[in-house]
Image (cartoon, rainbow, N blue to C red; front, side):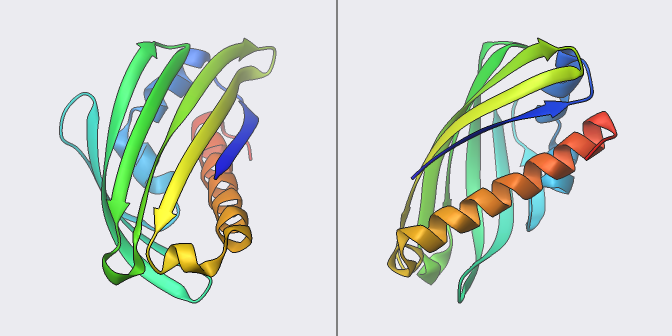
Length: 148
């Protein structure tokens, strides 16, 4: 599954970059996130509860941040296990560009899922993933830029 989108955040690029590396801000913006802990400058551990169709599961996962060219670009990869519900793993490339209204954030993400979640069908998984990404970026834009 692949997702890509862009959003304008009403804040300078460095502020947006710093917020994307702040576990407290991320925890507040990630749908279903119960816990997010920074274990090193490039590693995070998370506990997230997700409901995809009839399947609700608590995922425990790790995220690795790769600062390619801060504050313009970075990549992240992660994987999580949700017990009997299955697993998810993937990554994203994020680009931040100066924009007259603040910062243009672009992302391209890829993910793979397995287990019960994968049996739900790709259409439901893709639509749920888009909805969750939309909720995250709307919350992030409001938190960082003061707009929705």
